[in-house]
Image (tube, rainbow, N blue to C red; front, side, top):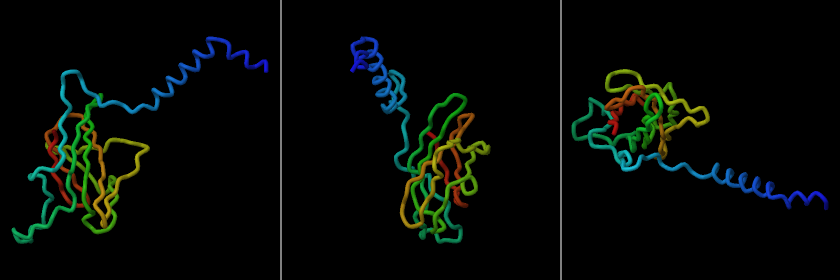
Length: 164
C-alpha cells in the first residue's frame, strides 16, 4: 500500500486537525451577545395587565371573555441600522379556524403611528394560530428608530405591546 506513505507526513495530520476544529466550531451554538459588566435585557415573561385585547363594546362590563391572543414575550435585538423586535404570541385564532400570520392578516404600527414592516426571513415558515389548541407564534418586526410601543393588528384584533 504505497498510498499510505502520505500519512507519515506531519502536514497531513496538521491539516486534518485544522479541518476537524473548523467543523466543530461551525456546529457549536452561538452564545448570547452580552457586553462585559452589562446585564441582559429584560424580557416580558407574561403580559402586563395593561396589555389586553380590545373587547366587544356591546358586552356588559362584568362579561369580559378571556383574550383570544396575548403577547407572551417581547425581545428587542440590536442590529446594524435598526432594531429587531421579536414578539411571541400565544392563544387561539379569534375566528375559530386556522389563522395564517402573514402580511394580509397581521400589521404593526409604532407609538408614533408609523407602520412597522416585518423582518425579512426568507427561509422561515409563516407562523399560524390554530383555533383548536393554544400554539405559540413568533413574529419579528424591523424598526429603523426606537419606539416605546407597538400596536399589533391581528385578524381585526388590536393588541398593544410595550417594548422593554
